[in-house]
Amino acid sequence: MTSGGAVDEQKAQARRSDAIRNRDRILEVAAIVFADDPTASLNTIAQRTGIGPGTLYRHFPNRETLLLAVYQEEVAALVASVDDLLEHHEPLEAFRIWSRRLAAQSRVKHGLGDALTGAAAQAVIGATWAPVSGAIRQLLDAASAAGDVVAGIDPVDVVLLLSALWRVPAGEGGLRQADRLLELIVAGLQSAPPSATARS
Image (cartoon, rainbow, N blue to C red):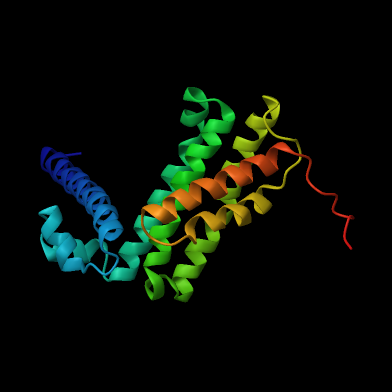
C-alpha cells in the first residue's frame, strides 16, 4: 500500500470510529430520554447528545428504528448481566434483581405504545423471547443447584408470571405491588409445581 493509500485507510478508520462513538452516544442518551418521556422526538435526542440532527438521522432515519435499536441494546445488556449477578449475589437474589430490571425495561417498552406495534417492531421483540427465557433458565438452574427452587421449572412459564410486574399501575404504589407480586412468584418457585396432568 502506498503512503497515500495508508493515509486514506487511516482516515476511513477514524471516520468509522467516530460513527461508532456517535451511534453509541445516541443510544445511551435515547435510552434515558425515552425512559423519562416516551414521546420524545429525534430532534430532542439530538440536542441532548450534542450531535447534529443530520448525524442522528444517518444512523436512525426515523423514530421507530431508534426505539428498536435502544430496545435491542437493553435486552442484550440485560441478558449479558446474568453472569455478573450470579457472581456477586446468591442465585435467588440474583433472580429478584434481574426480574426487577426486566420489569423496569418492559414498563418503558409498554409506555411507548403504538410506537412498537408495527411488523418490524414485533419481529424484533419476538426475537428477544429466546434470549430472555434463556437468561431465566440460567438463573433458575443456579437457584435449583443451590436448593432454593425446585428443578424443572419451565422458563417460559416464568416469563408469563413476571409479565405481571410490568402491568402494575404507575408510581410508588405500583412498584410496591410489583415487589409483592415478585415475592409471590418466588414462593411459587420454591414449592413443587402442579402436575401438568392434574387438571380438573
